[in-house]
Length: 125
Image (cartoon, rainbow, N blue to C red):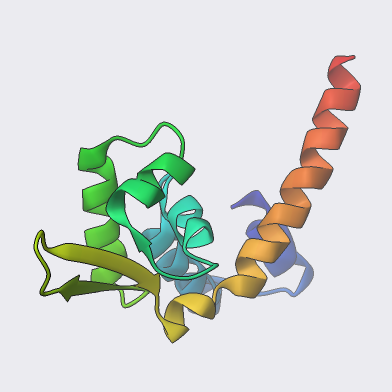
């Protein structure tokens, strides 16, 4: 949150106004917290996927954690779960239009992450 503090200091914002400016960022962080949610959303960017397909794309996530994260994303209307009446039952997950509204955020995080990796790797060599 140091960057937010710096921005708010430059804008001479304090007290309740400061908290009101930080609240939406806190809300977003609460919904997207953890190391898996954004990666799950990225895996669903090309269309619907089944559970095991998502698990293969998001390396390192356990089935239990994926199930929990998908439920959280569904509760927050970022992912939709569709159950098909087939034998065996098929279940697909897809990003909702609301979930697609995070595209710019994910793209910016991707670009920043690339820049950061170059910077950090350059220092370690």
